[in-house]
Length: 205
Image 1 (spheres, one colour):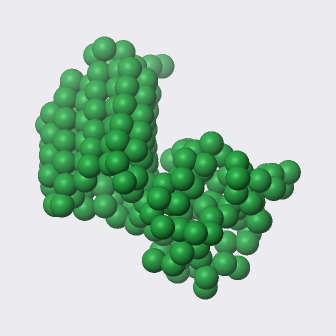
Image 2: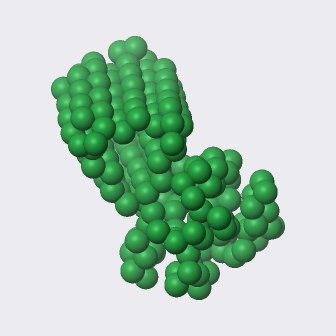
């Protein structure tokens, strides 16, 4: 780990990630964003756009701070093409079991809980106070929103978004590219991509 970090995405989410980075020991934190009107994000400088990604790779670590799963995946592909390995950032207040596996580019926010034998793959967001119980697998580019609760032995497919305050009961599979609406409850497998809302959920549209 270096002590300098480039965060891609100068947003509110990026400011939260910047604070986690500071708590993880980064002393110089800067942003890249394709909105050229931005020169600051909170107290941090915006020093360029995504076209400048490669400029800083000899001196800086990198992390993507974009909540949209598809955009995050696209930028991750750009980083991979330039042989840039992303950092892993975990808030000091998060509780992570020693058997959990956390892959590159993943951010775990304050007061989150990741229990025994969980695997969280690349570029995931485990947001504030979310909980993931034992033996779950969270595929690449998943976003678990604040206050969502995942019971044990759940599989969540690539690029799925679990909404704020939602709950998923144990031993379920949710396929790729789903959106689970805020406050929803999942009590059965979801096998078709789409948006699901309600208690229990049903497919919307």
